[in-house]
Amino acid sequence: MADKAGGAYGTKAADTDFRKKWDKEEYAERAKKRDLDEKERMQENEERLKQGKRPRKGPKQDLPKPKELMQQREGSLDLDKNLNKTMVVQNPGGRGAGQPGFYCEMCKRTYKDTTGYLDHINSRAHLRAIGQSTRLERSTLEQVRARIALLREKTKEAANAKAYDFDQRLAEVKAKETAIRDEKKAKKKAQKEKALAEELATNDPENDEMAKLMGFGGFGSSKK
Image (cartoon, rainbow, N blue to C red; front, side, top):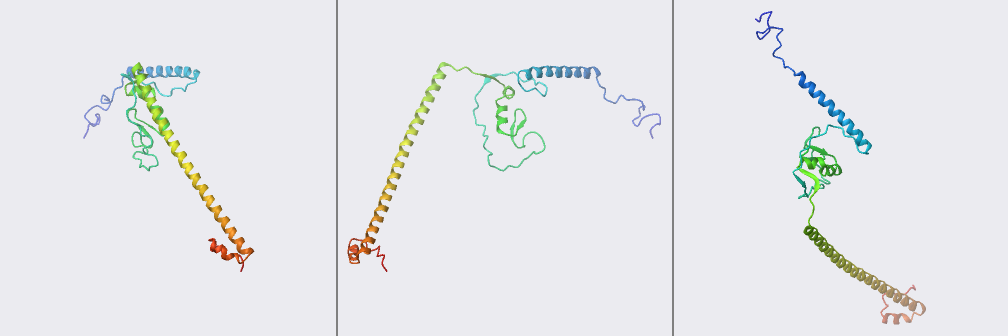
């Protein structure tokens, strides 16, 4: 049985050496730095508001220095790959991948729509995270000439294709109009022949035989 004057582990009851010791100077320095950062953030937000910009909410992040200029994306973002599809949400209540929306693996952030995701992909923070700056490489004279030649060739091909489509469409419209006119003429001719046959049969029954000889026998007479 443990001694009444001692603790359960054979130490004195008043001995608290096993507890964690806090470095008061270290935490005082941290608090001082946090207050200084907050003061700088408030001053920066005042300047941003004067310039018509949104204030910065969180602490300023120390982004890595860029290693290269902004580069063109090699592949497509496939923003519409899940359009009109039903998906099972793997992580509905947590953070990170598996939530509904568009997830940035580099920055560990999720965006609910394509607009926010594209803004983030093109933002300075994301570019700095992947080691790129917001500056573009200056094109040389040869690159500009090659680009202009490529655009001219594409424009020429598009114009030729459009002209071909226009000619084909015009021919189709003309053929359709011709068919409609021929159909109207045939219908009108048939109506005239029918009216003539009925008129001959009505005015003189003896002309019924003549109408039959003329090919109007199928129309018959209006008399009973």
